Amino acid sequence: MNLLPLAALLLVLTGLSQSITAAQPDDPLSGEKRIILKGNKGEQLDIGSVTFVPGAKGIHYTFKIDHSHFTDYFLSMKEMKCLEGPELWCHLPYPYEQPRTVTTDDFSWLAHDLLFMYKKKGEFGANFWNGIYYKMTLNNDRITGVAQAVDLNQLAAPPDDLTTPPFGEFERTDIEPQPRFLPFVEMR
Image 1 (spheres, rainbow, N blue to C red):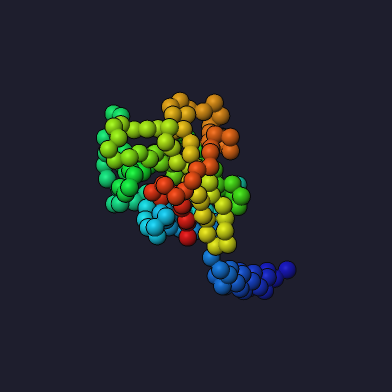
Image 2 (image 1 turned 120 degrees about the vertical axis):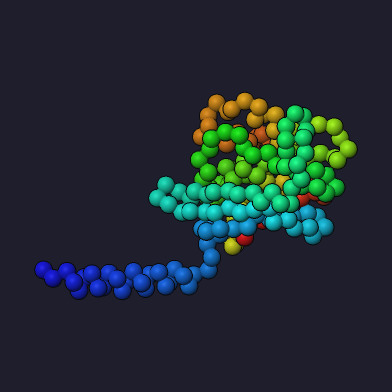
């Protein structure tokens, strides 16, 4: 059996498939997206990127914060990178191993990489009970999120199960976005 015609057909179909894929609109869960924190007064801060890689075992991501917008603070014996505005918003990287995966309806691990603590500029120390968790959803071609309150003291010790995000729906509380500095996130 001559396999040459089959190989040629396979090459043509592969090329056709790639051109069809390239012509489709951007997949919000594939490739690099910018992370934009948004305020109530139109403020937008591009603080980094997330890169999604779909695979056989789900959608994995890598996460990179650009600290050029952040200022170093030493709060409660800990160095923190903070965004300055009406409040200080200090990024707290999730301190434990996690799978860095998302699905079209579950962005919990990504939200754990985007934890913040807020405080008034004049307050002393870090107030870890003033934690911010962005509850995210997929909206058309982008991921959007709104701030919820969490107590970051819960991360002082590792969770019993490292495969389950510690801030589930019962550990989060809806908050009024109006008084907060950057209550919204968008990834596009």
